[in-house]
Length: 491
View (cartoon, rainbow, N blue to C red):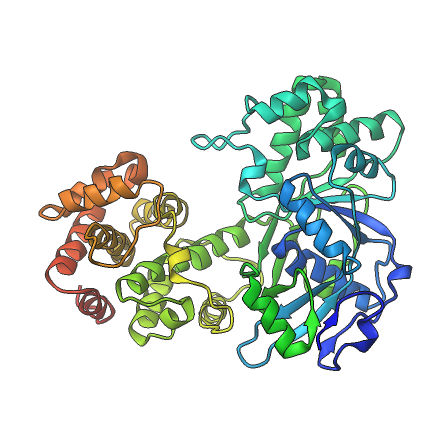
C-alpha cells in the first residue's frame, strides 16, 4: 500500500526515494515565492533543496504564496502533506524520486495575509512565477497595461491590493516608512528580460500612486533578469498513479520533470542572496546572450520540428527527434542558420549545447506532445522563428532552412483545411490561416500577405523566393521528399 507523503512518513519511504538530509526545523524563511506551480517546484525550489542538503543557507527557506483560485487549490493539496513535494526526474535511463522540503509553509490565499508576510524583515527575496499573463503586458506593444481593471482597482485602493504588483508596492511602501530594508524582486518566468518587465510594471504603477515612492523603489529595489529552463509537463492522474507504482508514494501534487535544469541569474540582489552557485546556478553580468540562445535554439528548435512531425502523423516529440530524417533536418537548420545569429555566450560551446538540446528532445520519458508544440503558431513563430529570419537577412546570411519551417507550417494549415485529414489546427487564427493557405495554393507568396503575422519578412524577395520554392515542392511532392531534398544540400 502506498505511503501518504508527510513529515512523519518520510522515514517509512522506500530506499529508492531520496529524502532530505536536513531538518525542516532548522529552516527559517528568507524567500516568498508567488505562484507555486509545477515549474517552481521543479526548478527554484529544487535548487534551494539541494543547497539545504549541503547544510547551507538554512535561513533562506521558501514561503509559498498565491492570489489566484488555483493557488488555493494547490495550497490545500500541499498542506495535507506538510508542504512536501515529490519531484520525479524523467531520466531516459533511470527515473528518480526526490522529496523536496525547501518550502516551509504556504501563506493563506488572501491579500491581507500576503501583505503582512511581505512586510517582514526576514523576507529578502520575493520571487515570481505568475506566467506571462500575470505581468499585464499589452498584447500589441508589450508595454505594461495601466488601464487594466485589476491594476486600476489596486491604484484606487492600494491598502486592499489584489494584484501581485499592487501587493509588492504596498509592502515596499510599508518597509520604506518603517525603515525596513527592501527585498529583491526576482522573476522566474519564462519571458525575455523578465526582471526588466517586472521592474517596469512596479515602477509605472508606483509612479501613479506616489512619485517619491517610485523614485525610492528605483534606487533601492533590484529586479535581476534570469533565464530559467527545465521541461516540466503537467501532472495528471496518470503521473500520480505512476508515482505510486514506481515508488509507493501517495502525493496529491507530484512534479515530473526532465533531469536537465538551468538557471542563469544577474548577480544583482539588494538584501543578500543564498549561495546558489554552489548548486549549479550561473551568476553573470548579462543574461541576454543566454536568453537569446535558449529562445532561438530550444524554442526555435521546437517550432522547427513541430510541423514536419505533425505532417508525418507523429504524436510525441521524442518520436520526432528519433526520426533520422527530421533529426538531420534539425541539426542542419540549427547549425547553419540559427547558431549563426547568436553572439558568443560565455562558457558555452554551441556544438555541446545543440547536443544537449537533441538529448532533451529525444527523452521518451518526458512524453511532450507534437500537438502542444503546434499550438498558437501564429503567435509563437513571430517570437521564435521570424526574428532569426530577420537577423539572417539583415546580415546577408542564409534562410533557406528557416523558409522551409514556414513552408511546412503553411502546408500544415492547408492540410488542416481538409476536414478528412484528421489534423486540427489549434490556433486562435485557425480559420484565417486555413483560408489564406487555400488561397496560396497556386501562388505560395499569398500566404505571406498576412502582414500582422509576418511583419517585415513578408517584404523580403529573398525570403519569398525560398518560401515559394519549398511550398511548391511540398505541393507537388510530400514532406519526406522535401526534407530529403533539404538535407541533401541540393538547393
